[in-house]
Image (cartoon, rainbow, N blue to C red; front, top):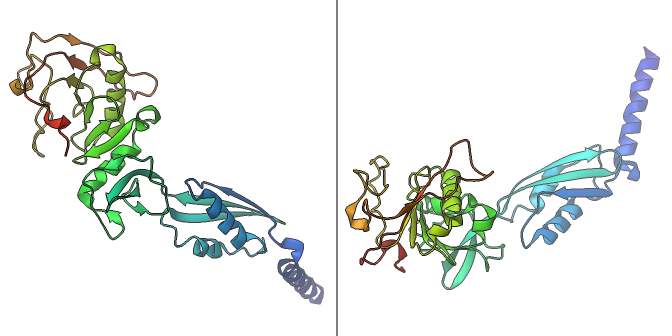
Length: 286
């Protein structure tokens, strides 16, 4: 019994000595998950908070406190590697768009959080967006989610978002999403229609039914009421709105089916070549 007690005391003493000396001091810090214009500064801040701690009693709270004033950081985890290593995993909001406030652009994350430390110079504008308490108001957050869902090739071409769900490309038609539902499918449909040569010259692409995207020139289809089910907008259908300048005689072509990025659903679209003398409402500048 005495020998067992002495052994336990010896182990405790050894642990205390190793923990409180350089034998377990953190020297090698690996940081993953950091992006953005202040990535280097964030890494340096976390390294300073980690180096010198013990891998036998690592305080991850010290890391979280070090980056607490950075709105883009949502969490920090650490995995120690005895005797001298630690891997720090950073959970971060990524900027997808920007607000224009008093002539200055402020970056916005997917969830609508404002990221003033992020360089917003090249980010698309959420036109008319409003924020309160450091975050977009709820009715404008669809715009941020819409931008976050954009595939890389198209994301680089987005200039701004009007009225929360109308995407303006730097060169191309307005993309009419109408709401924040099924964004991945709608972006895939938009990609398929834009890739088809017959869509050249279109001023809008209606994506409210992603399996049946419609592209055309002239006045776009009217936005349905919130409780109105999606309609068949194909020219010649009973529900196709006559005000669009679309009719059964309009030329219709089928853009190619979506490529590898598509979901299990096959996306087909109609491209309308008919014209209207009415100015396209979706193309009017705010």
